[in-house]
Length: 135
Image 1 (cartoon, rainbow, N blue to C red):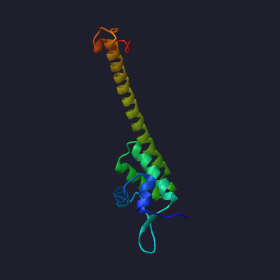
Image 2 (cartoon, rainbow, N blue to C red):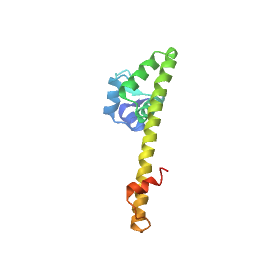
Image 3 (cartoon, one colour):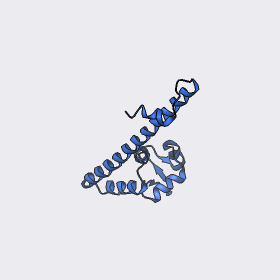
Image 4 (tube, helix red, strand yellow):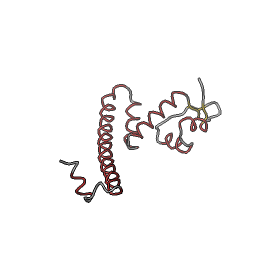
């Protein structure tokens, strides 16, 4: 089993040692200790932190992540609760994606409108130009 000290582990997972210590303090990760009480991490820890970063990347709050970790630690009997939590986060993330897509659509229309103004193919104001897309 390969053992990684905190600096090397931080580099491998793309986090700072400060962040890893914070995650440890919040009980999101629990490093093992060697005979000299130095923390070390394993390949399983790399995978676990990777999953935590995926959760964080969805916009999952620290409270939700901590809840997920607590449920996971309680074992398979909490699978329904974990699934429900992840489903809630997924729906919220999808709603955020839809909102960003809608904003990008307006932004793209604005760029197209500017292009039309520059090349004189559009004479109407932006508000009227947008009406083309809502018919």
